[in-house]
Image (cartoon, rainbow, N blue to C red; front, side, top):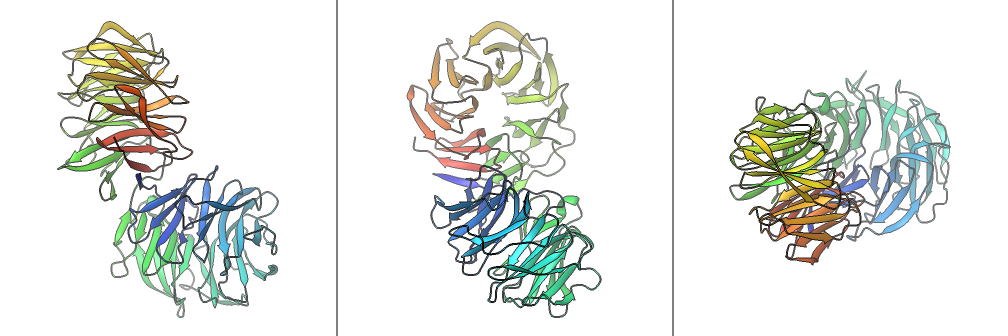
Length: 595
């Protein structure tokens, strides 16, 4: 079984993010890459990830019944799937138009669905959920439609907002065009009916929020006088009782409005950085949520508008590596620039200015330093006691490092393009060049006397550490193909090497005896030894994770689809029975194994 540390929403500057709310009030929904993430609103560490879309998915919305979720992707596919079962069985799949789906709305009886976006032949469609047959047409716009909503009381009304600065109002069913409203001077980002259906709001890139009669579309007023916000308004959400509205803006604030008077009762300030722009919001029960451009999810506090009650952090981009480290007996999972308390699922970012590009590999040395190498051509040492990046503890490489491996006594080896670099006590002490092969991976023996470097030539080259230098021993171990990853067991007795030819080879360090482990159907990309020195795990491009038993190559535990549709990019062991995996789906998962 597994525990998921979920990714954050995938955000894009200047693009609104739609959050989906659960009619029962327990969960909320958002998307990242090809995944839909369902999180418990009271305890967001409880998460579920739906990964059946073959393309990037942009929006997901619960049916008012609460039994189904409809999610739409960039190819124009909409999938309607079950929320009650863990398997999330697909009920229906439709392709209303070819192009990205930006918003979805259901009628209150959960029988009709409207979808809008950027189709090649049309910008919207409205159809019956169980047959896909059309129940009207969405016309009247000349550009991409960003937002749609349907009045949740009869008589039904439908409203859309578009990049042509207009909103259109439709009556139905079947839905027919009634009128176009062009009060906004820039893109319309969001349109939403109040829960009681008495009015709807439209919000735009011009900083304006207008209110209209829900039945006739007659204009009823504006919020905040000349302008509601100093920046574009990306999202609005009504209070359950329809008396208040919350709005999220690029001016880095969220405002709560009293609709009757048109005035702001609370202004939440979320920061001053560009990443603090507010691109989405959700009002569910007594929870007020907003999403920052950083992907962080803020739980807003009416009593303290400058400080959220809690902020959910994590990853919104692909993760390349991770490691686990115990502090006072508590395991922490480090991934990229974030760390998780493995027991509670709480996430925090490492403080200070860190790597400016993707972190390629990480390890923890004897002095509790997190040693990381990145595509920004540096190796950094971060004190895990402080959990703060140090400006000085960084070593510049001549070329891009691929991996870093640590040993005893302050030793570390960075394998770079065309170079192997020996580091000691946070300094570069020796560089090997003109190797005659391209180095791909490295490992320092726990004894600190041997360094193994795996090459694209399908060989492992052994070097001995002599003072502050590396000496070529002239010893070479042959494997089946170009090396992708390697690691010594923690007791130093074995070296495991995985390669592009789908094989993991384990060498006995004492006599060079080798044992081959077959099972992956594509190249193996990462591996990690268990602390028991008797098991190791591997991840491959076949999306598989295997846990192998050293003395019996046929005895293996298989974790298929560990990160569905994504290969595992990093593995680490929390303890003998718990494996942690990550991948480019931006999620971290923890697996309890029966070994």
